[in-house]
Length: 95
Image (cartoon, rainbow, N blue to C red):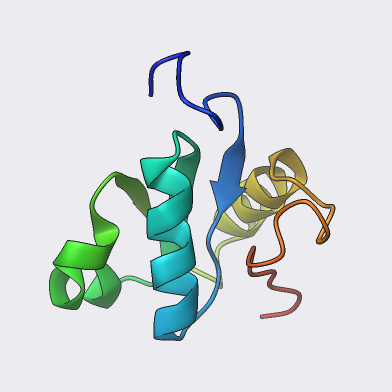
């Protein structure tokens, strides 16, 4: 995103499974945030919700692969952690 958008320097990891997380991530992407959507091996989210994936980055991860779990940990660590600032950020803890 360009530097003249309100959230140009924010990275969000979208981890929700419901449409609310999809919509929230779309709004954040429209405001300039880099929104990363981790998915399982099928890529179902990207294929079935293409309109709500606009402006987002999708990465396929294997929850059984240690390197992919480490990558997810790094993505979440880079995302905002203050729920008051971005209340619709979905968080994932567990497998």
